Length: 163
Image 1: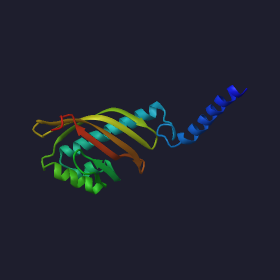
Image 2: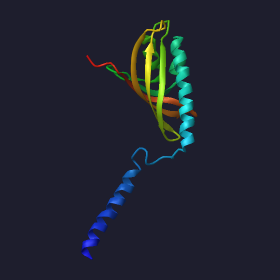
Image 3: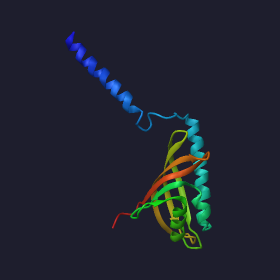
C-alpha cells in the first residue's frame, strides 16, 4: 500500500501545483480563439501592415504612427527602445526623408487570443528608387485598443551579419 500511495500523492501534488501555476502561463489561459478568429486577426493585421507601408511610402509618419497603441514600445536593433506613439512618429521622421521609403511586410504567422496576438514576419526595406536597403525579420505584439488591433510591442533585426 505504501509503495503506491507515495507516487500517487506526488502525482496529485504535481497536478495541483501545475493547476495553480498554469493560470500565469501564456497560451494556457485566456479566451481560446477559434482558428477562424486567428485567421480574421491575421487578415486584419495584413491589411493594417499594408496601410502602414503605404503611409511610409508617402512619408506620412502621422498616419504610420497610428498603427501603434498610445503606450507602444518600438525596439529597433542597436538602439534604445522608443516609447509612446508620438515618440515612434518622431523616430520615423528621423529615419525617412520627405521622399518616403518602400517597406514590404510579410506575415508568416499569427497566434494569441481575442485581446492580444503575436505576429511573426519578414520585411524588406527599399528606397523609393527601388534599391534594396535591408532584409530582416520581426515580432509584433498586437493588442486591441478601442476595438482595433494596434501594435503594442515590436522588435526586429536585420538578416545581415553583425560587424
